[in-house]
Image (cartoon, rainbow, N blue to C red):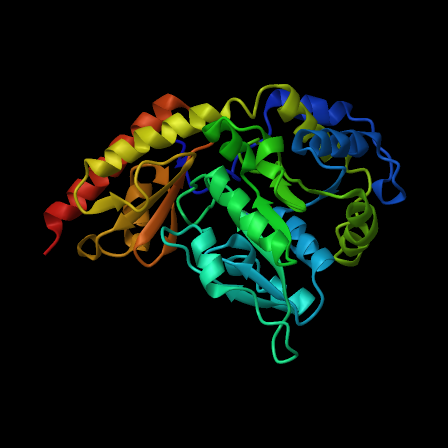
Length: 353
Ligand SMILES: Cc1ncc(COP(=O)(O)O)c(C=O)c1O
């Protein structure tokens, strides 16, 4: 029986239609600026996000890191929450590449808010301090349950940052999901930010690829240079860009609403199972974070037992696993996974001391 893989929305394989579009792609050397398919994708994405320009990069991590590199100097301070991907899951890149000092601030519910920012304030303009320079938000917020940050909250924080002379970056790896769940356009969600990182390799089913979106001068200047410096200048990469164009033109964004429905189905099974609980309440998008009662054992143990029933989830903490719905898992597989989750929890619970 093939495993139902819910570890991440990055495990998807390109569909037959997507592969055919990739095979047909017109290409050129993108380092020479000669790949027409990459150029087309960059202008499509800039337009959808309502910004001047975009730059195609291999990964979301590179998109975030280059965005930080373009908007800070060594010794500057970046403000984000302690669970932000850019801080927690990017190999310490903020310090390693940019010499940036990171100030993490925890919001009241796992998401930052204006009150938290104003109480902390920016650093005084005195030579003892790092210069507060960049606010980085994440939407949807992965480690905070795949939740959508309410847009009035985003706007208030970005207004505060602007007033205090900070640039604004959005890690929008799953901004598609935020748009589908909130009913707001990508353009609206991106409006308060200077730069946005967005990924094609997650819910949209592309094999790789992300973009940095922002002002023309930044994208064509520093972002381009940093992409080259980081080894992200690719050649006939139109074959990959074609997968993203295919996804955008064939309703893959709109189809994310099924992933969101599937996450709700999984959540129901979590709620009705002993010893496990939703970490953030009903999922808003495609991520279901599940707390494992220590009486059931560790998250790793739970994931191993669930695998015996044909379902893969990601243990991402001592007592927490993440199940992530995506376009390669259909409703009937989600129902099977939901049953497997219930059965696994019940069988370990019965044996618990
Ligand atoms: C919120 C968020 N930002 C950035 C990334 C990084 O993307 P990549 O794996 O393409 O480097 C991820 C990856 O899962 C993510 O969840």
